[in-house]
Length: 141
Image (cartoon, rainbow, N blue to C red; front, top):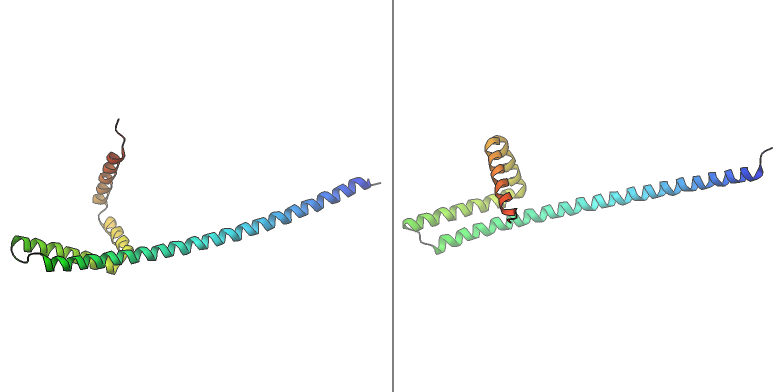
């Protein structure tokens, strides 16, 4: 004959186990939903920051073009100073146009292509920059 107390206890254990499974499943679903919302929000924020960075880059480019125009107006046009002024203004103008048209994504693409086409010089530049940064950040006793 089955013990009624043992049967009752087994039933309670099974009921508690079922409730625990349901609670765990609900918690898992809510955590998964929350993680998805956080990931979506992070993507939106990153996209917004990317657009802002592109806008800032374009504004810097326009500012450089404006500075080039000011230099051409205010500085001498003849002689050695005129030649230097013309070159500086031309460089500013070209850089400004590049920044305005290409933005950060274009700069990134161009840098990647340059490194692919010139891996050894890029490696040496990286080593040099690393050495300089290490020297600048090292503590002196």
